[in-house]
Image 1 (tube, rainbow, N blue to C red):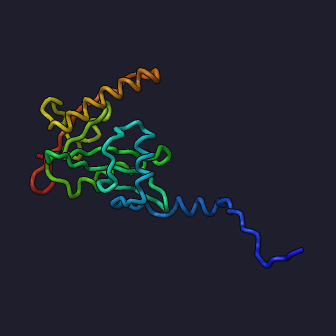
Image 2: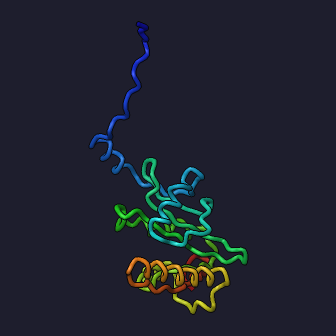
Image 3: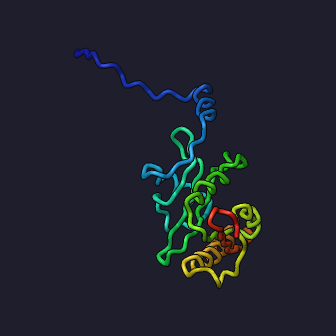
Length: 183
């Protein structure tokens, strides 16, 4: 019989309460996304049935704690030069803690004066503090208008298939003056 000095592989240790508390007590970090965040960003966006197209991690700001992405938002730059704040999502267990607001602040900090946003009508008032106002979707730039109509159609199909009510959408526009004040 052959005896080996090798130790059996240690099985992974289950996290203790101290581990979990320590992770949740660590501070939130808001930063530009890296390629390592891409999978979690896509999973988060898909989990909320948001527009699944044009998810480029390089345009995202993420909220993290420890190794996990807790929330994300992107500032799309369309081919015509228009910008769209999009894909805002926060993990359900982390909501109502101001994470979405801080993500928006971070994404808009270096944004040009004019930015568009597609939102559910019921949530549109939440964006007023950043200078967003509802506009007629027909007046939006073509890429934003395309995303708006795509949201109406796909949202309607998903609502029909799931037996839920359709969420009406609106297009919002933010236009600020030279110092970030709403115009």
